[in-house]
Length: 162
Image (cartoon, rainbow, N blue to C red):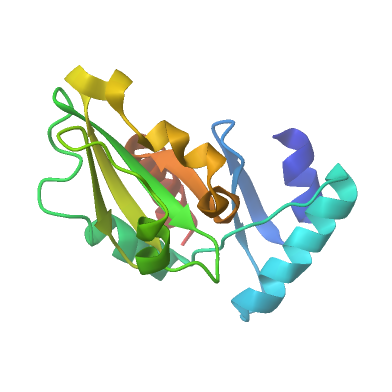
């Protein structure tokens, strides 16, 4: 994570923070065009780390909308459910992504959001989930999954930096 932070700082991004070994980076940028900024970051990461790296960027207002736009009672029944957010990498949309994800009835539930999918899985049947099979699908290259707690931590860091 220290090396990741250094890569972002070398791109003249300010206020760079990494988050809990998750590959997430919070920063400030003068470039307001997210497409250009994303391409710059992908290019730098890919060259430095010697592999194709895809990123998805969210501004603080977008992350606020994601966190506040969650489905009813999502993230509130932690003894019963495991909660994750699938962040989508453009050009993938929630409607397209949901078509490429297989769900196990009675175990997996997925809800569409703005640039994300909210996932809820029944803990007592978690070993029966189909969601782990997403890694073998074409959709997998255009998503990144974070648990609800990590997303909350990211949002908190973004709020503090705002």
